[in-house]
Length: 163
Image (cartoon, rainbow, N blue to C red; front, side, top):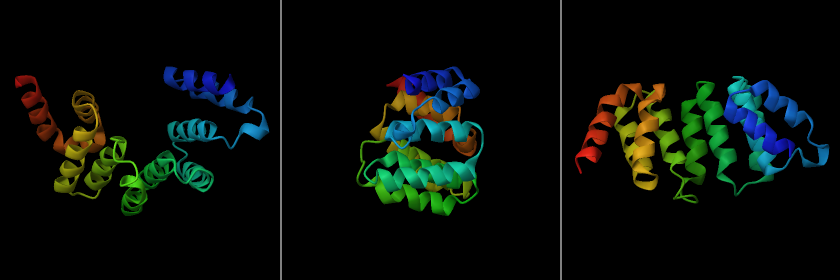
């Protein structure tokens, strides 16, 4: 129940209450995949990226077949201005999870931070093909990491509306 409550508080934007719920989880459950995921989200919201990176490494060690640990490692590295390593992290699992649109989407953000609009567009297009086009486009238009290609994204959205 504490895990569900922690998720709920995160959805409501109350990180402090989410942390309080996580502290209530018994020690034998602290390394569960879902608990680690919520703990990572709390660290990310607190902008404690170095700790998030360590937690993502635990996720990978305990759950090597779960893409979330690699994605979280990639995000933590990205936030720590280590985008090349972030790309490597996500690329390790991309082929194993071809239906997860968040992976190429994150690659678009990482490439954008490196200044490569062409690569960012390529990966965003891939995310759009995998995920729900409308949702990916809407999310991309609110993502400051992709701001340099917002005109391209608006063009895609306009094409979607015309068809």
